[in-house]
Image (cartoon, rainbow, N blue to C red; front, side, top):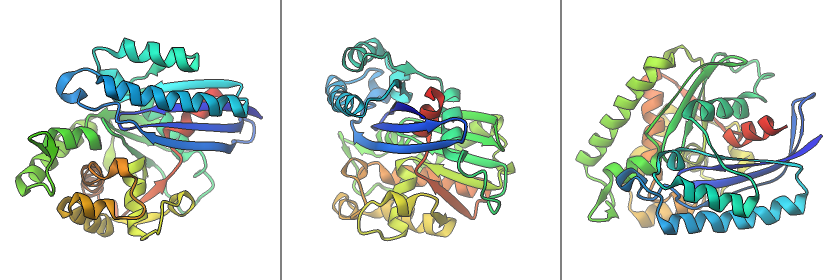
Amino acid sequence: MTRVAAVDCGTNSIRLLVADADPATGELVELDRRMTIVRLGQGVDRTGRLAPEALQRTFAACREYAGIIKEHGAQRLRFVATSASRDAENRDEFVRGVLDILGVEPEVISGDQEAEFSFTGATKELAGRDHLAKPYLVVDIGGGSTEFVVGDDHVRAARSVDIGCVRMTERHLIRDGAVTDPPSEEQIAAMRADIDAALDLAGETVPLREARTLVGLAGSVTTVSAIAQELPEYDSAAIHHSRVSREKVREITDWLLRSTHAERAAVPSMHPGRVDVIGAGALVLLSIMERIGAEEVVVSEHDILDGIAWSVA
């Protein structure tokens, strides 16, 4: 066993996994997994820069994670940064801050690398489940981008497109500096058109309709599952490998896009940081399911973070 730490810093959240990994057996024993909403991508789509307050929130989370990594005595650490820091003009400021706090330089990976890690993390433990037909389509709906990966035991094709829940919210659902609550039919239609265009782009590289099993990752998908199950609180064990039908996803998406901030915030399994962006994330998921004709999505709590941990091990 090798004790490893993995950090995934995305557009909306930063997450930590500390685990004991045994590459010989394929076993990953989780010691600590946590997530903090930092909204690093705040305004990046509009300004092209990481906001000072977003950097401070992210650095505060890094300091907390540094203590946890030290406490567990992890031997190796890998810090991967995704869409927001890839797009920003001032990403060097972000890199220096992380290096000072955690002692490692964040790797601002490409969308293709991001997709590879997501696929490994999501599918490594599905191999023995004969009832799940291959090939898999792994879809990782992040804050700034969504990754599409088709593969059997290994990746066959991958593509990252810019339709994350934060990016779609900022691009289509904000008026006069605030999220429209609820959005108009015109706003929803414009967002859907943007998503459909991105799906066309993804389909040029990834054979989306060849997939036999859709595996959905990240906070938008797991929150939809929690709502579908009417969980009294967020419960990773209940969410992991749950299945949600397309009709249920459509019902939840319709409600989310027509609800008020207060109604969404009252959902007991809803993380406060997702209240304003969950409608956009759910619409991305629904659009994907409609495009490929998926009757259900298999929800995974294991994702890019687990893939990063395996790459370290």
